[in-house]
Length: 165
Image (cartoon, rainbow, N blue to C red; front, side):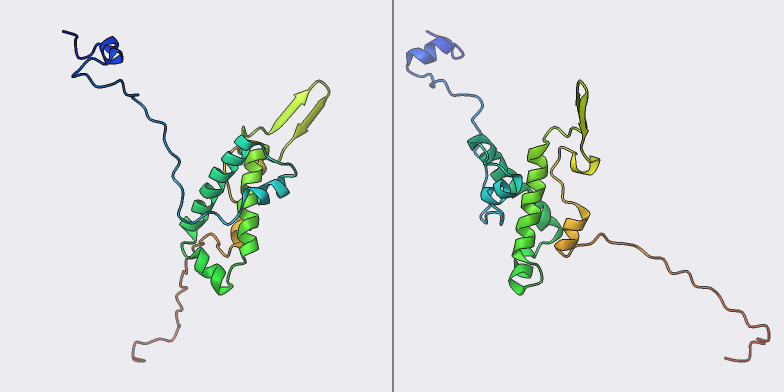
């Protein structure tokens, strides 16, 4: 009688043994019920070149990522667009520009040298991460919260005798 953990028995199709099942199933990408506002075409126009099929798949994924980043800070984004508080094209531009920055420099290189030739990229644009810049957040109507502290300055009258109340 074959042992239960004998892989050759399962391949032979012996009765009582389950067929060999892969231990890891490929994960199916989860799709948002609402697609991002920017498209692969918007990114390609701003990038200045047509992406390959693999790059297009990555762009679609990153567009969904950047839209989730925006919705975390502006949960009623689509309502604000419908009300005219935020322009649809501003959202498309912010989403596409964030993805273009990542696609142009996915490793986050700041500078490169080859012999006598070298170039440097602005550090703000070369993080290798999906980021939305402060001015882009402002275009979407979101600003960083600032905190102010009011410190009262006591006023003391020299002639106060306590009978004024």
